Length: 108
Image (tube, rainbow, N blue to C red; front, side):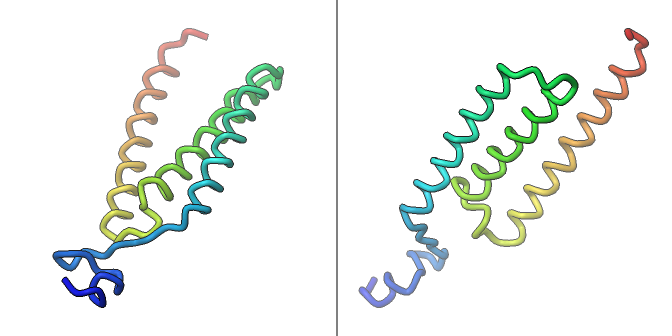
């Protein structure tokens, strides 16, 4: 493989190579650390009914950052986006059925 081919963003076999700047990774990991600290701080606070909501918002934000940047979904093809989206739909269906069962038992 010539030097020109390697520098064009194409790896061996025609696969696209996406180069991510190291500063982006450090920025994302810093945000993840800040959100982890926010999780710890808010866990010690009494937010009433909003404790779970705040914890879930922070967790979903952290998971989204990991999927988009560390798993390179942000730069992936549409098929990968479809798979990620379909997995979220499937997860939502599972949660909906679980909550339907849990809420219909009359424990409250």
